[in-house]
Length: 536
Image (cartoon, rainbow, N blue to C red; front, side, top):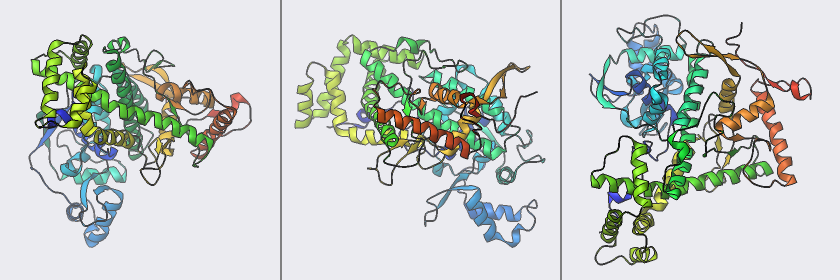
């Protein structure tokens, strides 16, 4: 009979809701805004499915009384929208289509074409990270991102807004109101709550700038943080599940997550700390580039191993489902699945032999018979390996594709540089917008709480060395020798490359306006905030 569709399933929403596809973060944000607007529910539209086009939106603007003179230049209006406001799939081709407007306002999702604006599970995963542990942050985000709309009519209420927000708001006004439907984002708590805590703390810091940064820039920072934290969540999940499957038990620290985003070293007690050797230069072939390439290879190799671990865990959960077992939460379900595996449960052995015999089929597949013979004493392993014999290469490519796309190699919000072909070496490299975003977050220090109990922050200068340590301890971003502790004995050439990398880091800070070195003195090498907030 061969490997069935159920056998090939490598991912369950209860474990990881993100599908292994290429992610477009603009489209992820559009779908996240929809969930934020309706408190985790998907809306039901009164207008039904409408296939929106750039021409349709341009015609709406030309016919609207708010845009005086636009009707005289419809072609210019359409070109303007396409260039500056709209996300198009297959741009410039015959099958070009509208995905959505730029995500600059909460109501931007109303103007999307759902079939071209897919998030592949990233939006509900983000929403769950933002709302985990009964956090009220989604309400604050909704309140900020909906500004400019009348709460009664859900349309533009006037006032001073930037041009991009005004255009998107006026386009959304024509779509009418929608209501939350019965379908909700996934109810399962994330398996790594610590990453959610770090994300929420970062967003709270970012909200401190909401009154001083233009909305489009703020949303770009928000998108950058969402992409980075999703990538870190997926990568940390790979390490977690690899350890759980190896130990056949949930790691003790994961039962009571020790991550504290307010601590100087938030991940100090986390057994799944990550480390990325980041090349801050812009040239291939340097010694630092090779160090970073080796780091990238290790992380992508871990993502390849994630396929085997996820496949095994999924088969264990499917076995429990077949017995009618119900757990109160996902972690308890995984705990029971690993317990069944650790105790070599007789029913699990019988289940795996039956599945394996179905895969071998009649007449028997000689390849599958060899797998059965190689793992005769471990029917579970034989079952998993038989499946992977058929689909490992496919899933490995998809998992790599997911991790790579979340690190945004084609955008300046990312942390990955790839070559022109898929065979080209890849390396970690903090790009301009990502560096700018992280520095904006780093220069904020806790400053008590407001009347509602929400944390306050104020901007302060910080030493470059403190910034380097902060990036390593919070995100795993290692720039110099002091930040990298990967267990490798460093050669003199390595140490020289890492010192040069620190200088490249300072040069990048200088280019984006955060750093001016007035002297070589250690305590004079400071990063200055771009925006002064919370200062008396």
